[in-house]
Length: 548
Image (cartoon, rainbow, N blue to C red; front, side):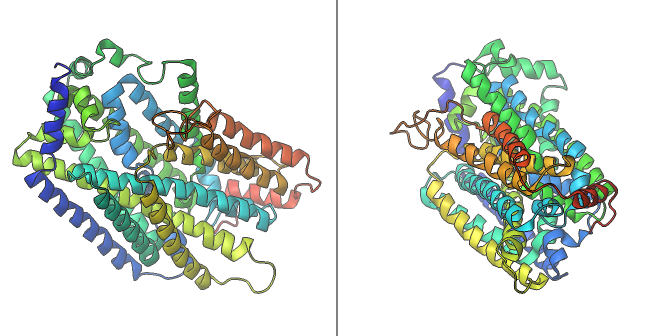
């Protein structure tokens, strides 16, 4: 296909997708998704009002249920739309990008899942508080958890506005703004009314829909190419605009030494960040035992792994059937590759194509709703359980469980309102970096503290606080002075240049900084580690004796 023809085809595809029947069906299915999730929330919200019900879903979910919820929490719209689009546009390098998301779960399985379930109660800070002084540790970890969740939350909400605008065929800022407000209002209802139990069921439904929709499209792609993967790869390379280079490394991430370092930094953040994401860690408290936590992680690995295998086929299918230039013309980041693939597979202009397009659009919308609910719950739990009830208390009466739940519900409303305001302000900006930054902050601040606490006998309170801030502050500062914010045409502030850090993702520097700060804080601490508390944590984490 000629270069001049590509934009025209892309324009026809993009215009055909939301027009007429496509638009009506997409709106109808979006409404169905909203009604189903609200019904689940109202149904579940009647059952149990204790803190354990609100924060941990009553610890009554099985391994398969929690595995589905974990994968539902983890597989965001960036996974469903963004990774598939990268594969469609960049072939081998897109596949390479997706590997980090899957490998990260091995870290969770081997080092975190069982130990966190045994040692904690509702939040990450519970694990550290077993052997550290509560107030400084909970203040540091609670603040870092809220920063990570808010960064991730803003990215998802702005993405929701852009996604709905693209899929419904309107680029108006007002439509994006109302979508952000609507998603924010829904996530507040999910959390305040249903708590963890409703959030979990929403994530389970979303995971089933996502896997089923991806499987359907994968089968249709493979049937189109008669099961011949070599033919699929060849067709994708031929229509990519890059020829054989599409199937070789270096198309996106190998242009220079800086770009290769940036990819290493991003990969490091993705692989290590998952084990420090608050909304992932709090899921392990919803199962009754550490064995169930481990089995649910194995289920999550299977589901996430299967999804990314299907994402490879879908990305290559979009490249082969839609065409790389057409995907890029419809959306430069490739975020509409999957809906456009659905349209082509169903037959552009046909009822089947309209139904398939609307179905995939609704699944993408359900994906966003489920992820923002989990993020809001994690941040409200960090505020109510760690900051309000413990870190900010200096003597006096203790906060009861009922008051803690009320504080969590109020904080969910405040966090939701704050996320709406920030997302409305950021909707014109390129916020794709926020997800990578959230992973980098989680890997830099939360992971060193967690691993040191679980595995280093000498680790102290000062070391924990230094590890959190020693990873959090460099991660944020390096992004501020990176090409993401200034100095290039795609930056947040393209008209100015004050960047001096060459990488877009700070993980390569901030993650070692977090581990180093934790070590320095510990070896320079005048307060020795409490041997009895360490022994208690070790026994509880490894055996489950005394676990909640």
